[in-house]
Length: 180
Image (cartoon, rainbow, N blue to C red; front, side, top):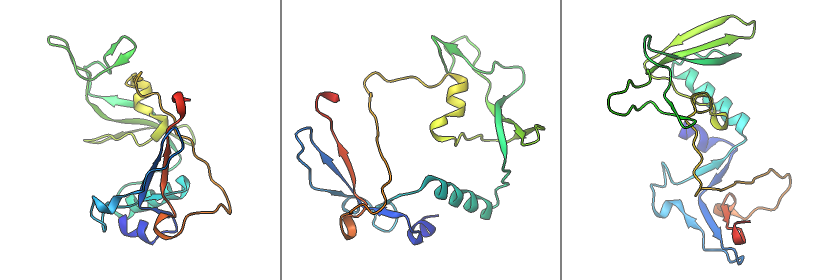
């Protein structure tokens, strides 16, 4: 996928720059000064829908069975074991000594666009729903960290002025005075 990304029209990001609460900008930190330039020293600013399509095609090309227009409704667990362990509003698959752990996930139950139910089983089940966090929300795994009250703001502009060449896609991280 890296080769496809390098040939894509997505804006390449080679660095990050920080801006202090007083407005002073740091020198850019170029990833290639620390990481291998040909493999991991860049990222991309992607249009999410196009990137997701690229990931889907790549998976299909590599032999994945792709089923579109399906909605996962439930995680499937090994029979006879609890589906999750809830404690104080959160859940964990780890169990304290002497207690039964939550059953391992063995697949998913999904509905197709006509409403038919399908079950899919696999040795590994990945939740790739992104910010929706399908599994974390349903299992109660999401726990807020009171020290990480952060927010990211972004938008897209047409015709915006960009820096030149290698700095075209620089990510800027600004610290807000008094934490906003």
